[in-house]
Figure (cartoon, rainbow, N blue to C red):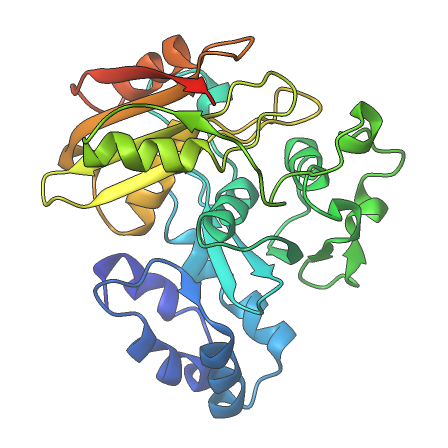
Length: 296
């Protein structure tokens, strides 16, 4: 088991910790599939709802909060039945708007793993307005069930009545719905090819700036993030932050970053380059490679 989880495991019931620990090996990054979740329920004799709430300290152990020193964990349940953990991430010295909330991190974790809808969000405190707006952008976002300790489960519409979202801007394929973007770039560079593929899956209905970041680490691994816009604009999630969240979930530090590519569409109304340079500079001396691709 990774050192970062030792303290949090001590906070969960022993009957759950015993079957959980074998799942939390060297490569554990907060993803538990539906079969493993069913096994935990059988072995611990604890019901699913209680298990999910009990796992929140594990999710919070993934946090990187150098500014607030406050660890927040969240868990998203995809339509597949798999669960995806996420935690808050703050960039040292950078504006608070560059931070990522735990709910955003968990949702992006699920999205990158191929989920096309989120059914439940488990969190240990009521989601802030920023996160409610982000959840509302999802496929059937108003129906996502929010689970909180000591409170009845309720859909997002209970927490965000009279919401403004994609439907108000005539968007019929909201966040997590498969996107059909076609950007083209002539290259044989594997990192650029990966960034191109991720850009074609990004979500940018308001600016058309389909974009993604691909990070290569010193050991040759690649971590990616896609741009995820929001009808309210400010809760949009930057691709670099999504990629950095992936890096941290896999128990790697920012010092392992060797190369970073931002690929974005030439047809976008905005560019993410300046904001990405600033955010990257807070965690690494690696220079950003900025590449523009053309719509087909």
